[in-house]
Amino acid sequence: MTANPLAPEWLSRPDDANDLPRAVWPTNSARSGTGELELAGVPASGLVRSFGTPLYVVDERDARGRARAFREAFERETARIGSGVTVYYAAKAFLSAAVAEWMAAEGLSLDVCSAGEFAVARAAGVAPARMGYHGNNKSVAEIDEAVEAGVGAIVVDSPIEVERIAAAAERHGRVQAVRLRVNSGVHAHTHDFLATAHEDQKFGIGLSEAPGVVASIRSHPSLRFLGLHCHIGSQIFGSDGFSESAARLLALHADLLAGGDIPELNLGGGFGIAYTTADDPTPVDELARRIADIVSSECERLGIPVPRLAFEPGRVIIGPSAVTLYTVGTIKPVTVSIAEAVVDARTPDEQPAPNERPAPGHPEPATAVRTYVSVDGGMSDNARPALYGADYTVRLANRVSAAEPALVRVAGKHCESGDIVVYADYLPGDVQPGDTLAVAATGAYCWSLSSNYNYLGRPAVVAVSNGEARLIMRGESIDDLLARDPGIASATRRATTAEPTVAAPTPAPAAQRAS
Ligand SMILES: *Cc1c(COP(=O)(O)O)cnc(C)c1O
Picture 1 (cartoon, rainbow, N blue to C red):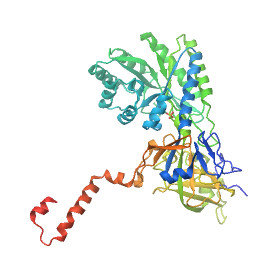
Picture 2 (picture 1 turned 120 degrees about the vertical axis):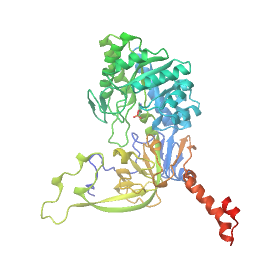
Picture 3 (picture 1 turned 90 degrees about the vertical axis):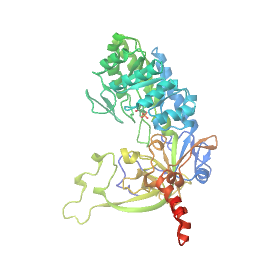
Picture 4 (picture 1 turned 135 degrees about the vertical axis):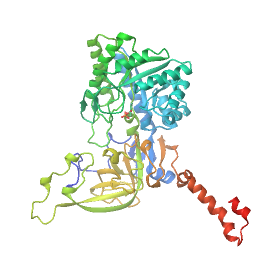
């Protein structure tokens, strides 16, 4: 069978489209005796029967294991260079009470950046002292609430916040620990990084302006300066961006030591994961070793003590731990002109070159068939393909099949042509309506970015562990959606109170007023 020319170059045609590559699927996923997907011992069919689709399923032991392994790797490596580490789980990747509890139980602290995230974390029993508070536009009320509650640290993102945090600390008779977010000019992408002197973005303060802001922090007795912070990007595979950024920050850190003690350096999050087998993130142990090495050697070169390090991983902890289950609704072969095919929204430079277009006089452009498999969710439960052109991996979840693997594009049900769930992967060619599909690595930035577009309810989240499933976030029903609309509530009231009026031939004025 010839390869489908619409397949992107990075995607190889599998011998077996039922396999579950270890790098992509949650640790405790497997094919059961009957061939269906089992997550932590819970068969996909049972999950679908109990909770419906779309459904996010989190492998609890996998998530907790990743949290623990990250903390242990960085504890080991920072101890080796005579320092220590605080690991904050970045709540924005995915937060529920259960997830907050898991992270706290595995010895992680928590990063939040809004009153809502703060409230969920507190409700889950996470002590404010173990939280960091982020954001480029924290409201005065959010700052006040965090300071009053005794939040561990607040990250200053602009000079205006120094005064706001200091005033809140004075009001509540506290000394508030703060970090200063600087923009190191390093912005890392998946495989490489860009280093500039002046980056045009909303977060943080330029390196050259930092000394002035630190002096202002130090001038307030109600503030304690913990150290510098930077976050260079997301879904980063290597350690070079972290190393460059650490070196730039440590040079500034060394200068700032002249004005007082600086206990810590926070290098943010951004550690990448494998969404497909083409992704090759550096293992966490290796990253920890390389980052500790560069911090150690830079500190030695600068002649300064090694500060305590802090990190804020989100995706690398929760991303690989979850899958989304969908039900196939329609399947449609679409004949497309190869020259005009949208191969992958992320890489316009990899689209077919103009010279692949038919020569003049050639009657028809070359075509190929793309199979669109549409599911019962889409960009409302996973915005990343539409937002970033992100790639994902899909498999049949309710059965295995010996049918020849066929290239598919999994689409959602939204009124938007960019509503794609998986741009390109192979499924057994006999995929049919009613089949359950599983999309891997949907733990981070899927539920947290979910929406009610087209009035779809946001799906439920279920945690699976040791053969048992537990609901950790209820899905939204249509009643939930209607309940938020006061126009619907009053229309329903009008409809019910109007009936007697219509039935009565001459309504009394009092009855009219009452409605
Ligand atoms: C988003 C974010 C993180 C987490 O990023 P991941 O890519 O999920 O690791 C950490 N720190 C800050 C400041 C962030 O904005």
